[in-house]
Length: 359
Ligand code: KG4
Ligand code: ZN
Image 1 (cartoon, rainbow, N blue to C red):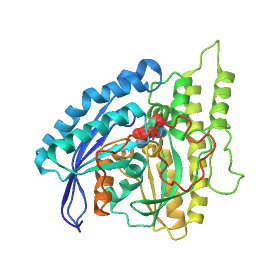
Image 2 (image 1 turned 180 degrees about the vertical axis):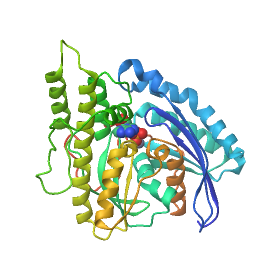
Image 3 (image 1 turned 60 degrees about the vertical axis):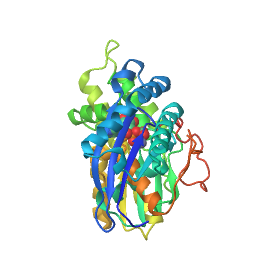
Image 4 (image 1 turned 90 degrees about the vertical axis):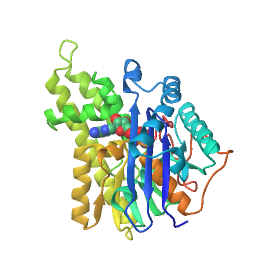
């Protein structure tokens, strides 16, 4: 299909309700006409994490409004669309179902094709939306529920080169924020505290002695908790020590990601570029470490702008356009899937993405 495509994207797999319109004229860079995201942080704040039932209900309440706003901001009506792309997994099942049902209703009413998108493919294809990256490229997808290196050779061909064997880094950032009484989501809070502190606390860099590019963050998290307990003064943690812990933790995560990225690049010498995406890719220290590595290796590096690193519907609309260009669409039998590995040939990782729900 080589005509102009204008696609509505819908995202509701975790705690962000998103709707966006992306247009692609063949031969030109894609254009994000609108990108609406309603976060739910305030709804989950009291619970120290995302509560699936609350998330699903909030998606149901906000999806219509998000779509209405996305169309209005794009200056378009429903009849100007060529299709509806929706996250069909992996994610919190109630939220994914809310999005899929909404997309089905919309597509059926307007007679539009519906395209089910893997949320991870949305993240992994974002560098093509933002930077026009050509295949093949190496992708580090690093978010609240996932951490994996992917060889991306086509819009529907992803090979997993390695990944976390336990926690995802975003999950570790969130748990550490909670342990240090910082608000959720933890990543940006830990980064802010780290900027005030210094990397002076010795923390482990697990699995660096092991070949390949598998990673582990659970032992690092435990070491941080021990460092916190050892630093308590009369049962409270001095703010300066908390900031030092954050700086030291962030430095350890960056070191692990950089060291393993070096190995992943060794495994994919044909890569034309190295891209990083997912919520944790918003972290300045991690972005800087990875871009230094790419400069050292003489390979192009890209990291989407922050708003397109975290969950959003523009990446889903774009992944939908990529699928449509390959002639791939779904129908009313499209199912919402809580788990949906990108590389179906890869052996499941032991304990990988324990939460399994976030992506
Ligand atoms: O991709 P994303 O928006 O959602 C999914 O996990 O699907 O990623 C969210 C994760 C959260 O764990 C959040 O704490 C983390 O990304 N994150 C960060 C930063 N911003 C968001 N982690 C470290 N530094 C940041 N600046
Ligand atoms: Zn995500």
